Image (tube, rainbow, N blue to C red):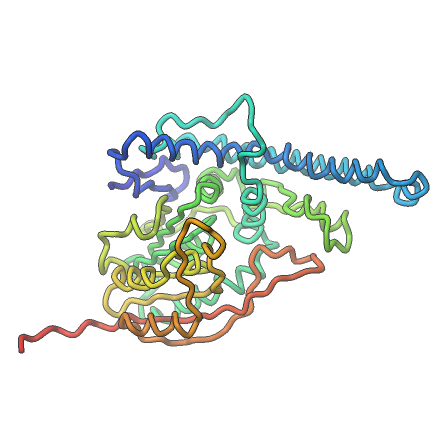
Length: 390
């Protein structure tokens, strides 16, 4: 389908909804609206969800022997502080939802979608995804996420700069870089800030709603407060300093890109949206993305088809297959060695293969850290040889 560009406030920062055709049948539209509304409901239900979590702790405390309650008599004050943090988070999430109007207006499949509800049934919403979205804000748009961005994004931007070092900076906008699985859009923005034309693609509504807000409506640098770890009571060294910690976003206010740079975010499925864009991209950059595939071979084939001859695919991320536990979705799960052989099969030259230790939305202050030892590579699309008649 055609692109539906969003009204945007700052320069060139809009979200197109590209994959959604006007002609989708009513059933599909209703399902899409329902899905979108469920995501919005989850944003709006956050405080209530959090209150249930805190209430469990309060009830546990109330049932302790009085002598034990006296020893840890400061806990009720902590519970109150948690509730205040939950309110701050809820205000932040409600602000994000309040700015989805233009997003809905530009999505033919979302006609009539609501963003306010009299009653929300907590059992029907996915709260893990909202807690994850708050952590994504830390990773992508706060100074607390800088270390993780150095691990996960800098190898990609470094490779891009090195491969195109012969290009004068003011000519970089001619180079088009595509980033599927763009999340909250920081890598896309960082690539655009370097002067390349950059497009992110994202499928998940909670990411799209949140990136739409931070890219287009953030009122100022570090103008928004959130408490990303408030509900994590395990593995905490110090509750006051860490669990209740306030994080400010964004650490860099989107905007101020060079006038020729084309910057955009597209809503939809990577395989669908770019179906007819063979040879239109100079670079595809995938960060923590390839393992979202149901069929990873199809991703390799698709990325190869999108690139110009001599174009590059830069990849960094683990192989934590997204659909491995989904009973109703196929999942083809390759080892790195198998994945590598598929890449070579499609006619890529593999360069700069290495391993990087990366965190993913890790609480830096926690007692527990998950580390991924991720493959990194730059794959160059070899020109296809002309076919001469025998």
